[in-house]
Amino acid sequence: MRVIVLIGAPGAGKGTQAGVLAERLGLPHVASGDIFRAAIREGTALGLEASTYIDRGALVPDEVTLGVISARLSRPDARAGAILDGFPRTRAQAEAFDRALAGRGNRVERALYIEVGEEELVRRLAGRRICRSAGHVYHETAKPPRRPGRCDIDGSQLEQRDDDRPETVRARLAAQLAPMLDVVDHYRGRDVLAVVDGDRSIDEVGRALLRALGTAPTAR
Ligand code: AP5
View 1 (cartoon, protein in one colour):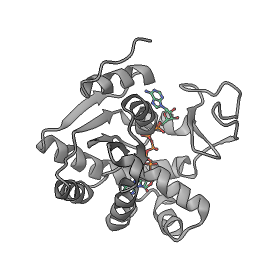
View 2 (cartoon, rainbow, N blue to C red):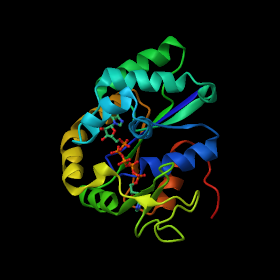
View 3 (cartoon, protein in one colour):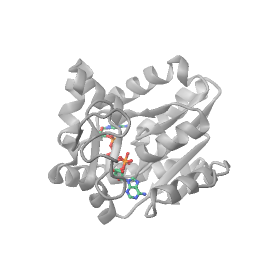
View 4 (cartoon, rainbow, N blue to C red):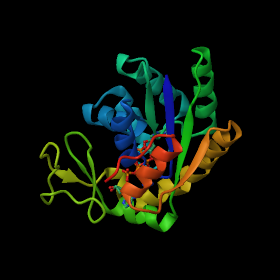
C-alpha cells in the first residue's frame, strides 16, 4: 500500500498536483476538503457540521475528519494506497493516522510539503475558479479554461469557492499555518518529509514532486 501525503498552505497547489500524481501513480486522489464540499452540496449532516467551520476558515474537528478519511480509505479503490490532499492537517490527525496505518502494517511512504510564500498564496486563492459540478480547478491567469467561465472537462460553469473570499482567506491563513507546520515537523521527525519549492510553474512543481517520489517525470 502506497500512502503519500501532500502538505501545503491553503492555495499552495495541493489539489492541482495531487490530481497529476494520482493519474501518474494510478492511485486515488483523496482530498478532505473535496469530501466536505461534496457533503455540503448534498446537504448531509456531515456537510452541515463541516460548513460551520469551513465558512469561517477554521479546521473541522479532528474526530470528524479522521472518521471521514478512514471511511474513504476503506473503499476498494484505495486498497493499493492513496494520494492524500489536505489530510492530516494537525499533529493529532497525523499521530492518529500513523497509529491506524501501523495497525495494518503500513506507514506513510512520503510526505511532500509544497512550500509557497504568503503573498503568492493570496494571489492564487483570489484567482482560483472551480467548476460547479465536480470542483475541477482553474486559475484566471495561471490555468485559464479554454472557454471563459466553462470547465474544459465537463462544460459546467466556473465559480469562486465560498471560502476564497478575501476575509475568509485571511482567516484560513491565520488559523491554519501553525498546525500545518506541526504536521511538517511530525513527518520530518519520521524521516519521510520532502520539501518542494512551490513558487514555480505548475509543471515544474509537478516534476519536482515526482522526483521526490523517485519517479521519473515524463518529458513535456
Ligand atoms: P481544502 O479544500 O483542503 O482547502 P485548502 O487546504 O485550504 O487548500 P486549497 O484547496 O485552498 O488549495 P490547494 O493547495 O489545493 O491549491 P489548488 O491546487 O486549488 O480545505 C477546505 C476547508 O476544509 C479547510 O479550510 C478546512 O476548514 C476544512 N478541512 C479540509 N481538510 C481538513 C482537515 N484535514 N482537518 C480539518 N479541516 C479540514 O491551487 C490554488 C490555485 O492556484 C488554483 O487556482 C490553481 O490553478 C493555482 N495554482 C496551483 N499551482 C500553481 C502554480 N504552481 N503556479 C500558479 N498557480 C498555481
